[in-house]
Image (cartoon, rainbow, N blue to C red; front, side, top):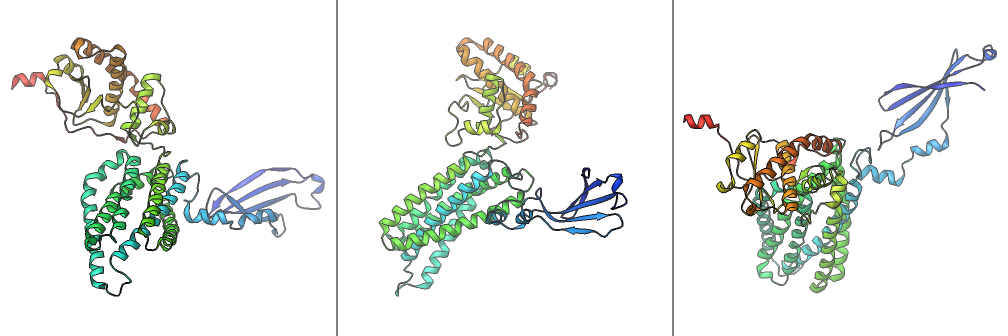
Length: 471
């Protein structure tokens, strides 16, 4: 037997990777055949996954002999064929899937395609009823009047989208899951207005405009939330590829949904009652698909709900939860069950009766100020130059202080001296552990540079006492 050494890998050139194996022959064979030979295998990168190498051909090169091309094993040739799943994956999934996207990607894709199927189906129902209200197909209908009404209802609806975008779009980043679900719930109201147009043809413009208002207004929430999810999925910095595949997925869902909607419209014909029944089923399925598509997305950014879960666990157990663990606990629809939102307030107006000289001295070197008001609410006000680290530190202290106040049942009636003692202790406790918390969050993939909480309207600045007396 001829002993062979380990393969020798030759660097890639374009889409081809070559590997060579050096085989040494026994001395007795040197007079018969060459002492050395190289076996070079040529590979081609897979169209979908560049980490998968497909054998193309093999060269055997010997000393003083021409290269011999060996045929490829039939089982290897099978890998070159495009399987049906490969075609589907090529069309709708990003290159390098599943390694190029986050683990929660595929579940979102499946439910999101179903979401578009249901939405497109009941959109066809609404459109067919509006056409009937305009008299399309009737000999007495005016084409010009129908066209003007159709254009006007779209114009009024788009104008409302412009007004709503300036108010709600900035809030989507803080809770994209909730806004995605809320937006789709609002979207389902639009077709109700459209289905009512045959009953009130004289008020077509009113009902049709209201329908467009609800649908376009919903886009203000669902659109930005969708882009937040795409950015989350693109863990390989491949947002362009993820976005383009998302468009393909939407097209497939819309095409299937449109065909289903046409079939349903053909079945219900002029029966408005049946049209409403079909719409009701599709609308419920639409909202359910949206819920299941977003509920398991383990976002890495820190909003109030996720910070609430993280800091509560850290204060109680001293452990840091992963993004998946927090995703399972956060209440993105109605908020967390034991939320601290009613007990901790950020950036609210200060109450002179709750601020003492000792408190001001305690927080003099910090970029935030914390106190407990008359209603046992922990209030935090930040300096203008505060950082995300300061927000995290202040909330960590607030959670620890809330634990102290709850366990000892301390309230304002006990006196400011007890509160000041707790505030001083919790500040020291939080300061000693903030570095441990931030390093732990970063190691688990949390994006601590993105703390998406509203810090309120008010900020403060402490003047130097010596400067104040000199004035």
